[in-house]
Length: 259
Ligand SMILES: C[S@@+](CC[C@H](N)C(=O)[O-])C[C@H]1O[C@@H](n2cnc3c(N)ncnc32)[C@H](O)[C@@H]1O
Image 1 (cartoon, protein in one colour):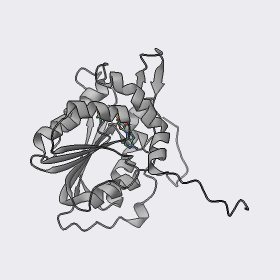
Image 2 (cartoon, rainbow, N blue to C red):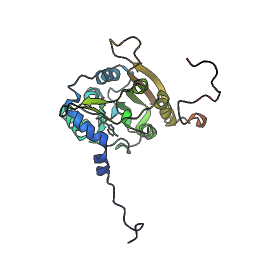
Image 3 (tube, rainbow, N blue to C red):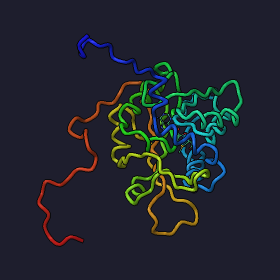
Image 4 (cartoon, protein in one colour):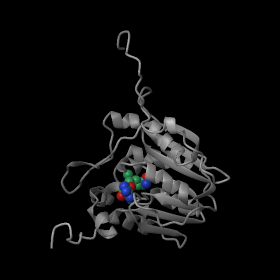
């Protein structure tokens, strides 16, 4: 048999989920994720509770639900919650925390098509998860697909300015005492906004968050964006000229002294 005729090994869904290094690192983090001090995690919980997101009596899909700190809160309010995460150990913890028939927690890599029908959700919520996802476009497109007209997408992420200064999801592994940094990708504020517009969603609100007691000139810790699927359900047409990279370089040659 020639090499071109050799059947290709089948990459099953299950195997590629297993193969994700990020999922394996979160498996290790799961044991101490809730217990160790983490300002970003705590501020994120506050953001979810403060933004104008309408979840009471609604169908909600949560991306990267982790140990369930936000899932529990959503579950107390929503009609149904579908939580997705690809870390077995993070999911095991959320399943222990949230035991309710209307909350379904599913092992799933959110970079693949989501296990939800078109226009079946009122809200999609993702907290501290997109830092681990290289391509934002498919995530926003899936959100636009599963949202009902008028449905909301809330994303809350480590602020790009923090990332630029070296901020990244990380923890001290109790087994080794070593700091483990989880693979992360940098997205600019413009990318978080324009990927939503590109998927036909309308931006309703953008906020930058800093914890109480932070130094006055500290950069914001978190960025949140709240989008809505238009009421008529029709995707707004993205402006082709404005698509692409969000940080655009000036065409003019720089003059004057650098500051
Ligand atoms: C920092 S934790 C945040 C958990 C929770 N949202 C919170 O705010 O506490 C990130 C979570 O996203 C999950 N995650 C990262 N990339 C993912 C992917 N591609 N598919 C599914 N889950 C993912 C991780 O397994 C982890 O549980």
